[in-house]
Length: 207
Image (cartoon, rainbow, N blue to C red; front, side, top):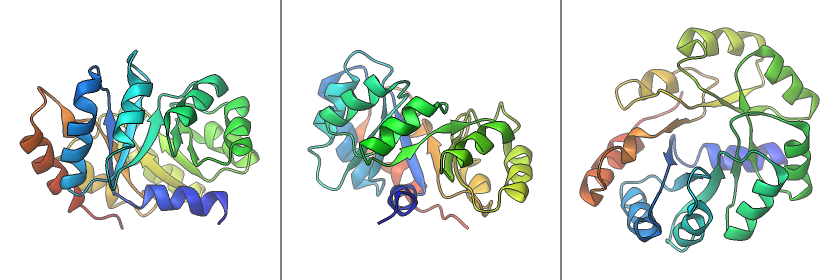
């Protein structure tokens, strides 16, 4: 399977990828179980908390969950994430060193882009799948539609500012394979509410 095909398999497994900031390891498995129960099985754990690597390890034990690491900023972060059990890597930006590290470790890698220049640098590195981030503040739907008309082979996962109310509009753009969302776990943890939100999100369809 090609690198692009491996990443497509991650991006199309769930049309909404929960972007998770988990501060308590004890919540890791219950949270993953609630999301999976609602039909969202691709989970991005951001490296924004001291316990993030432990959270990845715990969530990876949940049956049906495909767990990746987000907010990966360096090859060191990437290697630590893989050791914790991450099966894909997401970064807010794109650097050559991180792209090469992902290729060396043969792991699906979704780097962040904000504009045409970022995408062109990614194409130079052989990449055609990107996280559009932060999506809303970088021009929103008009921006991604404009870039899609120029870069026909590129597919995106917009993340940043997308809500339950706007997710379907983003998914209706042909170049959008999935979206990242933090609304799924907003507020105090409530397993039943997370599962309800996940069920609603899993019913959304990409074009």
